[in-house]
Length: 272
Image (cartoon, rainbow, N blue to C red):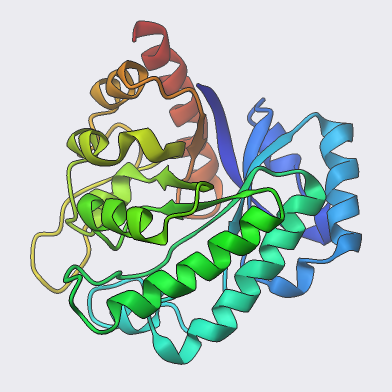
């Protein structure tokens, strides 16, 4: 399990200083601006990756339109679930699939949104169809399509993977998101979806304490993920992918928290 960090695609692809400052050599390259998904930017990314020795283990693919990370408007704004944005976002994810293939990344990752819990919901099958369209395009490009956990329960994610049915699907397991959205315990979730996990976000959080607001993100090790146990369980199921630190704040505190997470992960990994 190699430790890495989320890294934003900026500066025309000359963007790996963020990774290097932590002494790390792997990242997920994240971007919401599809205007950067060009061959020219991809070439710069490849050149900078070679120059810095930083490997891109996946492209985190954003999409346009509103995105509200909450229980109230999240279900009608996030991912491929809202029908008014679905077709546009499918095409945007295909552009990121092109970009990932150009830079040699193995997969794109995204949030698909609040996938309906009820499989008989009339909106469920159209969401599955949209995901399949993106996944098949990724397959044609020789890359994977990986779901980031968050807005759906583990069993809904498992069901959706089974119904999409392509053989290039995987999961970017964000253990904190399962907690923040009240969707599951990440250690137990590995019993349901563990064999699909390809990358992990190292992030921590607290469960919701009312029905209207998400829980809170906190520094790694200060929340409910229970990282030493979580890492032990990952080892038991044979996971050997990347541990990508994500701290969703900015500024100097983010830098300090990431450095501490690197140190803690190194210690915990030495003990599993």
